[in-house]
Amino acid sequence: MIRRWRHSVQAFALLLPIALPAIHVFFGWSWIQGGYQSLGIGPVWFLSPLEGVESALASRSIPWTIIVGAVPLALLAVFMGRVFCSWMCPINTLQELAEWLARTLFGYRPGNRLPMPRPVIWIVLGADLVLSFLLATPLFSIVSPPGLVSREAMGMWFFGLVGFQTAIIAAVLVLGLITRRWFCRGLCPVGGLLGLLGTRRVLNVTFDPTNCLNCGLCTEACPIGLEPGRNEVNLLVCWNCAECVETCPGNSLDLTFTRPRRREEILEETPA
Amino acid sequence: MTLAGLVSAPSLALAGPVGRDRLRPPGALDEDHFASRCIRCGRCAAVCPYESIQMLGLGEGLHAATPIVEPVEVPCYMCMECVDVCPTRAIEPVEMEEITMGTAKVDREMCVAWNGTSLCRTCYTVCPLRDRAITNWEFKPEVVDDVCTGCGVCVHACPISDETGDRKAIYVDPPGVRS
Image (cartoon, rainbow over all chains, first blue to last red; front, side):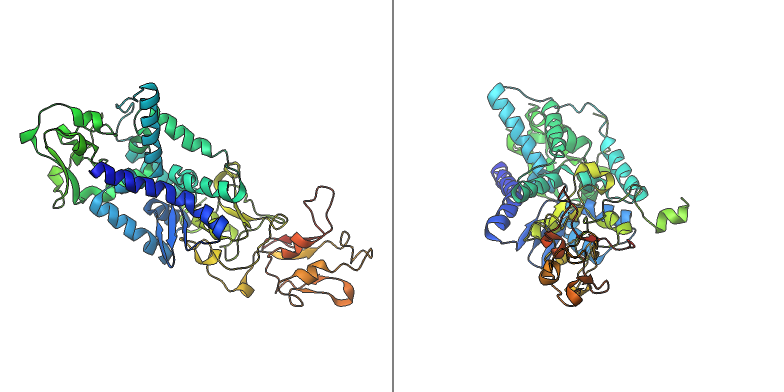
């Protein structure tokens, strides 16, 4: 049930920014316009929090438009964790599709064990922010794979061409076929920032060991290699996709609103 | 670079992509600050009804994916759509008359009106601020620097170009370039 909802949201979130420039080209309508880095709906606009922070650091200034655009999405992460990643980000959706294709066509399943230490994602986030400041350039904004999806879609409709930066998207998809969501769980500073913001999130996957059959299906289902049966759904990187909840045969897992987690409930990130 | 300089004066390590007939959209911050503020979201390009705003490729280094207007290809028609959509104010709302994308300059050796070949007055005719930004006294077009917005409509319309087609008899230099 949750999976159907999530896939519907994902399909919408993937197709909208691809359709928007086409609607603009063919019908001249641009009331809703933009992509994953910033979306404008009439007089309202949204801005990816990481892009906002990068721009503020790089330019040493915070225009009010950054605050207005980024705060709603930051609050979404504060309350609900990395739901952007698992429910909206086109890069996750495309990796999910690629994985499904590889499984259906070739019976191939990418590995689930991250071939590098888990905390690397925090190092990437920190390095990105420091370098953005030092080089006075919003670095990840330039190569953000989700941003590229919407930008290249626009380039395709507007100018009939996509740039060779599309290779970045392809590289992320290839990584995702080696290890599931390698980029998302190990390298993406957007995911890192949203995860940090969701430290005290109230939407959580909860694990109740009383019904647990120790079947391990949840571990197999988790696209980012967590072990829900060991309460790893409390990690910052858990993105509330609820794949484990959908798979659990014993009703041990649930996606539900809880009180904010206490500090001692939040697991430390441990090397995989 | 001193620590104070590091904190107060962001400037990009590499030379910018802006130059003759390569301009930032209207309302853009000055070139020293533009690429620091711009998050490369592409909304200015996406809202432009004329496809005047293109986004630079990764080959431009730290300036990659910033917006550029090349009036030889498509000029800016000053519809003022893009100035309202920038989420980080790398492009700030301005009135049409306040736009300073650059300043048009006539190459008097190349221009057929100036070199005496013909009575062409195309740039004068197409200028959105006719008689204010480009005057045509004695059939010789002259740019009024303070009024010209640098939109490049004149560049696009100019029928005189060199053999490559890239350099016209009238061109726009970005702000800060001395003639």
